[in-house]
Length: 157
Image 1 (cartoon, rainbow, N blue to C red):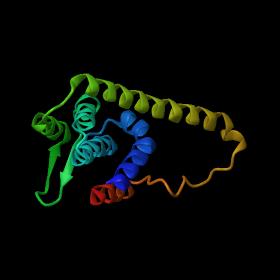
Image 2 (cartoon, rainbow, N blue to C red):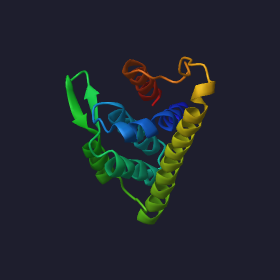
Image 3 (cartoon, rainbow, N blue to C red):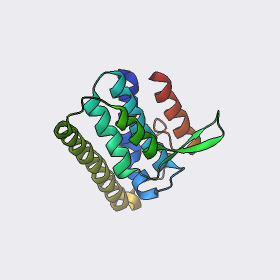
């Protein structure tokens, strides 16, 4: 589970900024919402109901339109609705602690967005002096690569 959590956080760091910009429920935005939902599932399995609730709240707050594809059912499901249902099943939740964790998550997400904006600004300033190269090959950048990364995270749970 720790490896899945590490991969999920790495994925979020790389893709939250683009997902927030994109806002496509069945695209990157939906995939980021699904990763947050997966982190809630991981926290639940680890017995951390407060962290699980915070991840589920994050989905409902920032990714309310996110959808994930279920190939077995050949249909899309609403990630925020699943997060709400999962959160409703949690017992022993300390709302104050959930709010604190949620605030940390929101601040982290904002930091990722600001870092991406700063990087984009620096790249734009240096563009005329820089040779155009391929994107970082270690970071998935196509829908297929992103889907594979999510599948790898989910299989680690």
